[in-house]
Image (cartoon, rainbow, N blue to C red; front, side):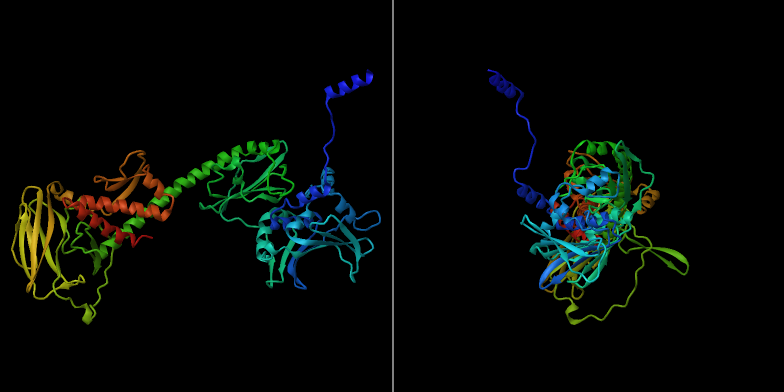
Length: 610
């Protein structure tokens, strides 16, 4: 009965015990293969040399007997020795996950990175065999060999003519997948990964690439940009956090790295969910945040354990986050202003270049003035067919035109027979009671002007107004005293060939109030633009005549889409300029003609966008 009562009591209490590994070799295999980055594995081997207080480290890549190898040679204190003064390789091989460095840290020794006792196993991601050589007190050298996928190890004495101080580690042959890992790549990775460890220890690391016949010195990475001073001091109960940040122009290549004791843990802090927000993702900042108290994942050493230490870091970084948000907001504002100025400058330049390429008689609402200095006096010269009564007038200041002699025309440059006709300007605005010249042009099939054997007959097809004559290449149109629309027609003939052309004239009244009004209009120049967020509304842009600006709807989905790329945004705003200018200048013409002009102006302006 007593035995039965004890069994029932044990069942109530439940069974207790300690966790243990069921298959040691299987656990070692899992640990060895947990490191997936060969560059990280090489960095761990170099860190072992720094922990051994080495002053010079050489990483050698080469071939021996056709087999590629990687060597890490240092002048540190080597493998710790046993009581007999011999490197204690046996302890290293039989105490995986029980690092001697952890005990040294517990005793108060700092500037040591390793703590898991699994660093050597990372050679599995680099090559097939590991050979580690170190010397004892007697000056003799000893080596230990380990092979990937095999549980055993071998320790034996190695004959050397000259004793050496430090450790030599050889991995051979290298895995097929990393044989293209050249010395330059290793140098760049170590310069970033071990940046502060190299700076603080003063170690000299050299990469010798015998395969590529090149050598590289590993210099701690230097960040570009402006070093930020007066950053909030980050202090926790577990220790201080070191912050070194630089302000740069916005770029996706700018990121803040997370370090631990001078060794990079994460290339970008934004891979952590807690930091996938502004200002960490703003793209303005480079630099490091070094938190020595963080716990890293043992296998890859490329991740952070989200424990109370990590939570303490996130909480401590709140003042720094607010400070960087303010800086990023100022940079965004300055960037938007600078971009707006650059876009306006680019659009205006593109339109000026387009004016030079487009026929001036057809686009006389682009009123271009040339200002020259002749004999010390300023002279303003208006184009032959210019006018002052357009609602949108473009002025180009200080432009210089080089007069060159016309070269002798070649045979194929002579015009052929008449094929089509055109009136210049094709469409224009004329103030009431004003006079405007028009010119008829005959063109051959290749758009060259025909000058010989032409006859002209002018007439007013629709609307009011008068022409001074009915024949001749150039006539003057006298506008009536009332606003309206007038269609002008010309018939151009060459022998039996007859062609026709029309021009639309808009007679306006409100532009001619006074001479002062004309002066104000002629001084407008290329319009500017501004942004107005009208989310949900369909309009993309509108022209404010009083302020001579084009208002762009920044809340329109097309503007939001275009803003994702600089050149796309520039072209979008350029199209809006063309739309507003054509719509407000070519009044009264057909929709088809408006679309044709839109295509033409957009073509010539986008050609000059930069």
